Length: 146
Image (cartoon, rainbow, N blue to C red):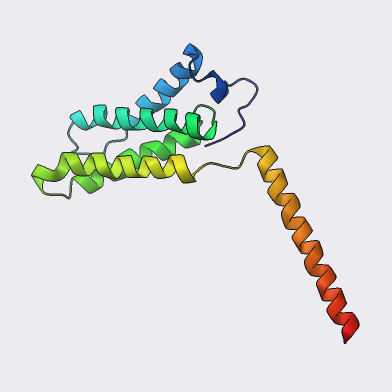
């Protein structure tokens, strides 16, 4: 998920704004259309609920902007993967398999797929540069001892 919205997009601080919600609803609807061939039509509603919840949870937990095209494609690929996997399960377990797999993929997306905010990324980069400089100083001290 992108954490810094372009000037023309809404930020997560606008999560209750109708414009923000309209973008999120649109992205969830698009992602839910990614069902694998042969998947029951009812899974689209389940996918929509899980994806919509994931996008909103991402905004609350991570302060992210509405999904961009790449985020929506990633979420759509989760729907496709979950539905394809569920179709391999025994008939009586397919609905549950679809829900659990999609929910798990979406939860992972919320927790792990976020880019660092610009200010945090800058801080991490500064710390890495300081560590490199300290490492160079230690190498020079070792050379002086030889």
